[in-house]
Figure 1: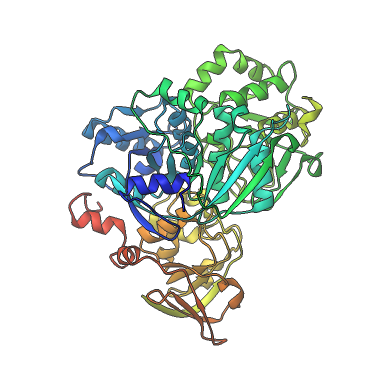
Figure 2: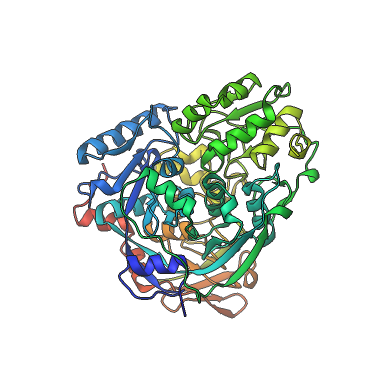
Length: 417
Length: 166
């Protein structure tokens, strides 16, 4: 019996011919990404030795620029760590700033066929590059940086076959909401993405699916390699790599088809995305206080273009705060050159520096008591973005932009056909 | 590892933001536990007693990489049993030495206040009150050793690879 992509990479990196669901493996870790939260005083343990500084990336993203004295202290600890070990791949506040998972895409840090860990749950984002990328805890990151290895449990794999082409007002965020609504959580399972519809999706669109796989509780979420992805990585990182394809006789727990052309705009109702998605019409007319587009799931050029297409020449409704946070300063610069930032700001959006920002309720758009928000970010958990009485709906950037204009949750097909 | 105590029941998809909410996220570790389940079950931290057991629903611990498992451990919860546990949350349980066992059917086998006996070596969960025994998904021996050793940090500290806590 053959192996899935995740199984093949885990076998290779654990020095075994074969692994199977149920195994516990110790694997070599190729890339360790450390974020500002790793350096906060309540978590940080001073590291005396690292395996290889060239395998480490340090990123300040959750509170950048520093939002509190505590955040500033964490940044200082991080800078000292970078200096101590001579780490080259360092993303401080400034030109190279961004959300770690967006920077992984911008710089090709997640190489196909390799293993990447970071102490942020949305690290599975890097699976778009055929990489075993996953969120781990701080102790895991410290251990991986020091020892160059970690442990993984091998789970069963669910394969998603994407077919067809998305319609103009529908995005892969809606595809995610469809999957989360219909199939619920994938705890202990891997997700593998493939099918004829992949070629029609940009890397950014695919990345929304791998990033949001954290919300499905997937172990690993990996795309089958294709030319567009391999060229993306080669254009950004000169390091050699070997892409990994699934065996023809790989064993899947289940193979599920997703017809991209048949999807419609969906929203997740407040508090969870598991089995909580409904057509946007079911929430249409709900008054909103805040609208947010950003995070590692929806802070790409694709997302800003889509938002600008809807908002250009229009105004955000009175009483509504539209906050847009590019995923990296690199995306911010590109969006500025393309005139997207101008269009968004003219419409009344507040465009913030690249940071996790409002998504985690840390800064730049915290919700107050009983407020309602529609967000194109990663999570709508109770209390996620601020006060626990706030209601958070989740939709695509198109749905969020359309809702910001009307002041109520709105079907984006009113603006895009 | 064996624990016997009264159980507290929680539903499906309990997420890390409920266990370690943003209001507690940046506080010192010792102050974080009092915010556990503040949004979904206010007052619970004053009702529970150290040594109690949590029986969760499916997909327990979905969400973030934050050290939410550490808060449950610091509250004194003896262990967690749930039909399925989010993989990242499970890692944090192991790494912070908080025993966690996946056991299909555990959520249906207990009512709140029942007494559970959880044996990690045999991966069995017994409802002492109702005299029923379930078989869980055994924790790999290597991970069980890590839990018994106190998790990753004491291990690295012993080897001189991280500095002792200031």
